[in-house]
Length: 227
Image (cartoon, rainbow, N blue to C red; front, top):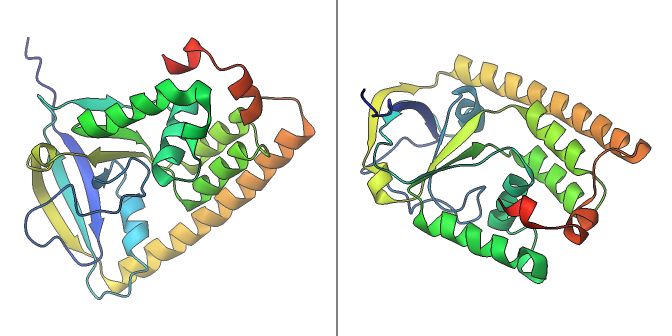
């Protein structure tokens, strides 16, 4: 039986188009999974990001990524994912919590030893939800409900040049003015829907006893959270 994994079909949006060799070390440090070349499983997400650009010709790329032989880390939609995103975005200083010492070491290993990291996308609205969770105004259940509702698909982040060299561009599409207008409207409406859901979720958190606050999780931290 052939154990090779099929190439992943992914999308990347560029405001200026990709010029030269694709590299992993050209992006910003403060991103969900640290510095890397970011791709998505849903084309609507990168289109929504590049559509409002003032550039005349933002480009959507459809690519194949061969992950055979690469070290790939798949993150679940759970508390560890939330901590990892906040650690990378530098919104919360996890090093000040002694009980999270081993987790910080694990995160550094993931960042420095992985070729590819795969996990759910956290947009700006979700970033605010995470801040609410860490400052104690939202529960873990409410936070994960919001993540599920946002539903922007998975992001696949290439952390090494070895992984970037596995990309094969299938097609590239310059976004027309009409495509950009439509995508911007859809993105705006989606964000309004998310905003309403986030507010309702926080109300439910504060009105009921569901879930746990970050302080409780710290006080009850144990091996189960680090598996």
